Length: 133
Image (cartoon, rainbow, N blue to C red; front, side, top):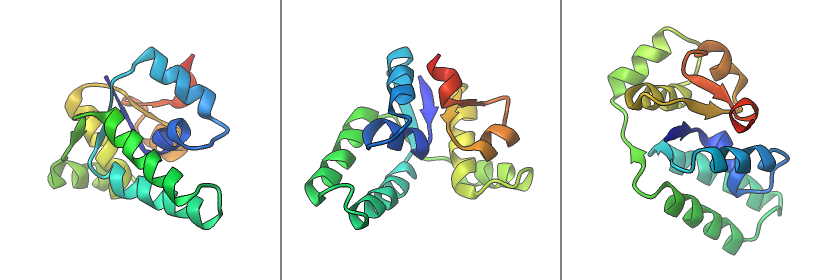
């Protein structure tokens, strides 16, 4: 199992130049986990794709359903205190720290394309490109 942030979910489930890396990461470890936060973040990306006409409404809905099905019970609530503790020792957003906290709590890597998370949490965060190899 690995924790993936929204950047990786987008790379895997939506048209992306990093789709190959995401597919390789999925082949390496097919059990992906995320905080429940992924839902709101992914919907924001879907909204952008809709507005830019990169997806139709039915494609956007199907994309969301596919991610939800793929995570299959591996969605977690992260305690606020854990998130804020990480916020207090970094310059990352609370959203980013939620993914970090979940990975730490589960004792698994956080796979991401987010350079700030990679820089500030090198002990838990792994670049998608690196994980995919």
